[in-house]
Amino acid sequence: MRIYITLIFVFILFTIAFIFGSQNEQIITLNYLIARTQMSIATAVSIFTAIGFTLGILLTILWRLVRKGKKALNLNKEL
Image 1 (cartoon, rainbow, N blue to C red):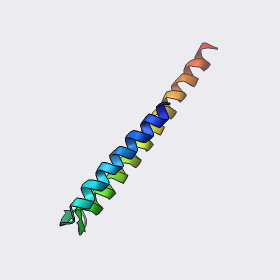
Image 2 (image 1 turned 30 degrees about the horizontal axis):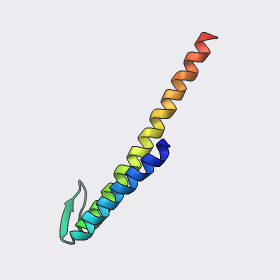
Image 3 (image 1 turned 45 degrees about the vertical axis):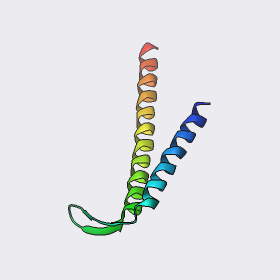
């Protein structure tokens, strides 16, 4: 049940990002450390939403792996 609530929440966030981006077609300039690019606000919102989602998933997976490793280490110490 928890996974369904999470998927619905993620879908709602992506929908809001899409609606926001589709209403803003202005061109903006993004300055990076080594480059500069021009893109529409819709593209920027899509890219940064995808980056944030990916980082969140990767950090969650890393956190779970560390937690499982600590549990396994504690079980080995008890034996």
